Image 1 (cartoon, rainbow, N blue to C red):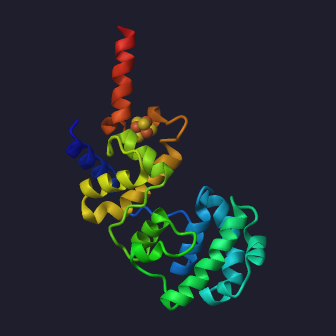
Image 2 (cartoon, rainbow, N blue to C red; image 1 turned 90 degrees about the vertical axis):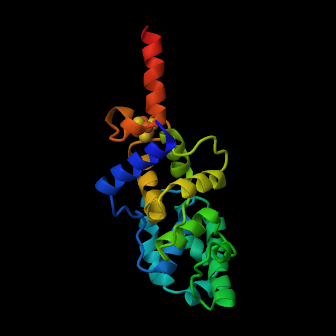
Image 3 (tube, rainbow, N blue to C red; image 1 turned 180 degrees about the vertical axis):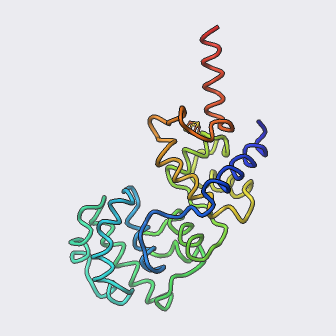
Length: 220
Ligand code: SF4
């Protein structure tokens, strides 16, 4: 299958079956989403959704979070991964939002990455979800699933995968394609044991095609 055909099949399938895919993080405004995405690094969305209600209630805006201390924030997020670092990042992020961005979440990726705790992946999530920009955030699921399907080829870094995906996807699907890949990776195309036998997109998946050929050779 040609790469063009693979992308076409990918967009057609998910546009039909999950056109409005969204993040599974709970949030009520861009500030809360930024907090949730910072916390979600190397942690599950489920866990983050357990701690954020109390956190958002205590820190409803950059002012209240900036005036707090990492020690106090820690008490709200102790059950997530790397709570010490993340507590420092959250307070630092709020302080920087106030000092450099007038308390507003910036739209540009190059501004977002100036905030403590915000790397390119987080910045792309905010840029696409909040501002509807055609930004592709590449996390571990996106990286793995795009490679298995064959949407990316020999990408050795998240940035390389991001560039390939952005190059080939229709512009108006880039933001939602991030969620398609994450959700598929979370529930079907699992890291250790992909559920290929029940996968609805195996008909255009490169990994599946390769395995089928390998099995056929072994049989003969
Ligand atoms: S067929 Fe298997 S490897 Fe391909 S996308 Fe589906 S679960 Fe992943």
